[in-house]
Amino acid sequence: MPFWKNLSVIRKIIQVASFLMLVYGSVIIGTYAADKISQALPALSCAYDTKTGDYCTLIPFQHQMDHRIGMAIKAGTNVMKALVPFFVTFMTFILMFVVLNKAFCGWICPLGFFQEMLTIIGKKIGLQQRESLPEEKVKKVRPIKWAMLGLLVFGFPLLTGLGFLDESGGSPFCSICPSRIMTTLMTGDVSQLYVDTSSTGYMILSIIADFLFGLMLALGLTMRQPFCRICPMLALHAVFRKVGLVRLVKNAKPRCEKCGLCAKACPMDIKEIHTDMENKDVLFPDCTLCGRCVEFCPDKDVLMMKYTVFPIFKADPAYFKQRKKAQTKWEKANLLSWWKSRKAVAASSGDNS
Amino acid sequence: MRIKIINKKIAMLAGLVICVSHPMQVMAVMKWQPAPMKHKPGMNHSRMAAKSFQLTEHHGAKVFFWKPNLKSKLLPLDGDQVKVKSTGMDNYHALVAKRRTTDMTEVAIRYPYMRGKPSGFSPSTLTGGVKASYEIMPSPLPREHRRYHAARDAVFVVRHEGQPVPKIAVTLTTANGTTLNEISDRNGAVRFTFPDDFAETKPGRRNNKPAEFVVFSEYSDKDHHYKTSFSDKYHVDPRHWKSTQLGVVVLAFGFISGLVITRRSRKNSNETKGRKS
Image (cartoon, rainbow over all chains, first blue to last red; front, side, top):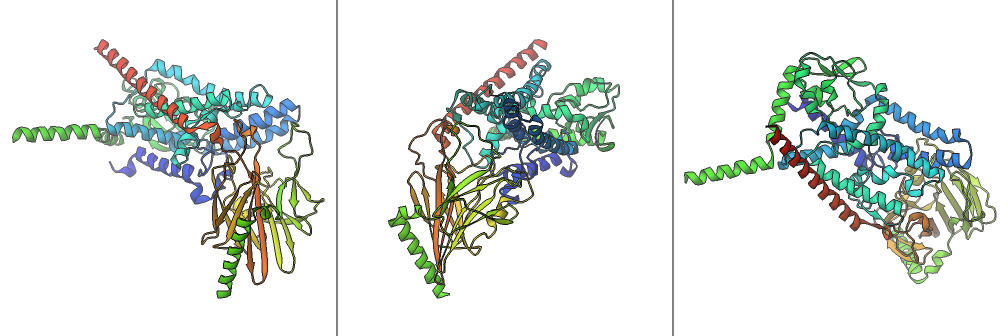
């Protein structure tokens, strides 16, 4: 299969370009550009990375809940005035989000791409991969992202502004975000990998951050998108997914009940994409719009990605065959199988001699 | 051309002699520093409020306030102080003090961070714009989530009429009593590592007051002498309470935990598969 026809390869190219832009972008566009572009990107690109090209909307949201809204309520001053910057950030986020919808996760986010790279490394080393998580585990994990969004992005910062928590509660999601550690390490800066002993709150948060990052590194080698499943950005996207212009549509056919290849291909283990036979709109809260379900759907036009009403990528039996072949070939090529075949060749040549 | 080179060498030597043998003289130059606070300590101070700065050696100096779009206005000095209000345009502004006599020009620059809305002008436009005949340009100014910190590097470029001045002596003096000397490279740039010279440090950034630093340089060209200073504050090195070594240990613990979880879940799924078959 030629690479320019393979959606996963096209996505990887876009992910690499986004990664370079979001992790090292200021080298090209100027040191201060990140402070100017949007400051409300719907992807986990970190402001602590001094070379970033733009940064994530969760940072201003936390700051505004703490410094503006919380403090204004506490001081009894005009809360509406404090809400203005919040709405500016929110509207900037919405304007960007509408264009790509949840594809910001699957196509743009540097942390999402980093986790995909971990899985590729795991595969290429020859580590046994977990195809999908059991349904009961997926169901247990899913609510965590809502708690992360509600508590760490909005709740704790607001309580900090109101004076109920100490300053460590001001931006708690940033304090535990693996993207902060990953993006800064990628630029050779180790200053964000630390245990902060200045207060109990900061110490707990910094330990969680380092532990979570280590956990993500290990899990990512054998499991797809471990952090994405609990990411508050995924939850924020889920709230506004109906206003996005990119859609995922299903025209269910009776054959769908027996197939289930789409659910197997899904890196977020969304079983509903297979089992839902009624809804046309199958853009579920956990979807990252990576398009793998469409790629691995063997029936014509059953699944499709649309931009407003225009189909941009449709399930196709011919594409499916080629894609499956390419996938099998890709998965077979790893260090372990290469090593085994080398040993087998050496053994057989030893026997012959 | 030759005279110019000789002049530059003389300037370089003079600068070196001044900063090596008379470090206290550097402190007597015209420079900006925050004005002493008038409100009681602990009082809630708005981040949007006007800021006051004090100009040392201020006699005969004129003060200009530069907006990010490089438009400037004359500010009246109230004694040795000026008060600057946010223009609502971007964050960094420039406070430039100039004093000129027949044979000498003195300049003091500071870039106050005044909170405003994005206007499309980059701080590099402000720092890069020619605001004085001889000036020290921070390259770059700290951006969002960054500050000048002890034990971290900072680069400054010395410029005369907008052109970088190579091989000139530059001095960095801190309020904590450290003096560092460097010579600018061929691009007029000097790199200083801020000294970790805070006598007492407490855990947590907000528990430590920043200290002032001044970058100073002087230069002679065609019988005219130039002195310039750039001042700002620098903070305590956060590594006093943030340990990277411990961070690596916790990360390794997380990684090992991840491997254990992977191994266990694989074992469980193999057992389940075995029972099913």
